[in-house]
Length: 341
Length: 100
Image 1 (cartoon, rainbow over the protein chains, first blue to last red):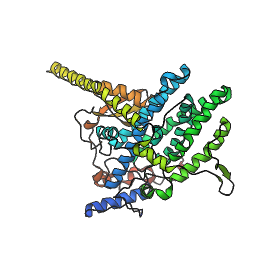
Image 2 (image 1 turned 120 degrees about the vertical axis):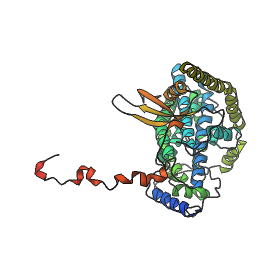
Image 3 (image 1 turned 45 degrees about the vertical axis):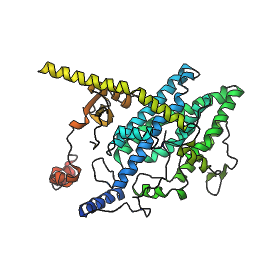
Image 4 (image 1 turned 90 degrees about the vertical axis):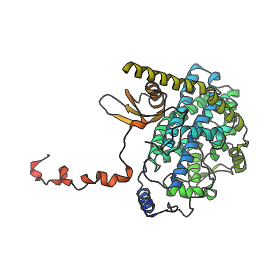
């Protein structure tokens, strides 16, 4: 899964594409020069290296949002674990959802290297301050939604995440490499699940697949974030080597890759304007409803409240076991000390 | 490794090292929170070796790691920079000697 690119204004970031914010003194200026040189040479920044505050903040925001998306992303699919149509599909789905938990953990760890704590990040998510991918604020109404999440949502995620493997911040890039290795299983299991329904299913099952595609397609296109013209932060992200490919470019890649997959599957993508443009060498596609996108991002999607409430409840109900584990560890330690004495 | 402020209720942080197969060294692969060492090992298995990525795991409390200072990178590693005679390419050997 993946978090979309948000274009919330970042005051410290200058839109002129300079990595420099405002050096405080000569020592910081020298460090800034070194940092810029490393970035220009396509080098890596590691946790304890000096970095501009705005770079650190941007990364904390992006990586924690990404981690939150993985964690909240377990909920829509988790709904179907108990109702999967066969033992085979159930084991696959459990493995997939467990991977999403793992992805969340890799990413929280990466963000923690920047000096934020796990508790701070969770607090941000649970209080509603931090964002996560808006795609998870839509319901999974039928079994085909599970397949479509794998095929389209994870497919869009792969497009977005592959360039992040080359991100200038070492721990984020390494976490993304790990995530990308697992993501291919997610997309393939989803697509294959849909293929079985389309090739061997009843007319009702085929209609279910088409319905799920119809509901999810536009939301997937929006996952890539606002158009480049409306993404003032993108330039800064590119300058810092955090973002490598623009939102519109990635979206186009996704559309071009998905059209032939839809043909093989035997579904239509719900866009009358979708057609091959010989001159551009790409598919043209219709207008994305950005008002709906922003409404969902800002908390007014169909499942925002439910997702957050489920997440908070799980965390609160798990508090006793986290406390118990710490108490157990403390007791063991005391016992060992006593034996040693 | 990190500059985080320890919260009271947070499980401690552990660094995880995995040997991917016999004959190879343990390699750092990430970190996680766990209440104690045994717990950290179990968590590491679930988080970092779901697809047989490892045959052995080490977990180390993150706060026990002593690291060199990134700011003194230059002065710390400088002494090795001008000792090119430590490298085999420093020495010219006639071609007819063959591979050496």
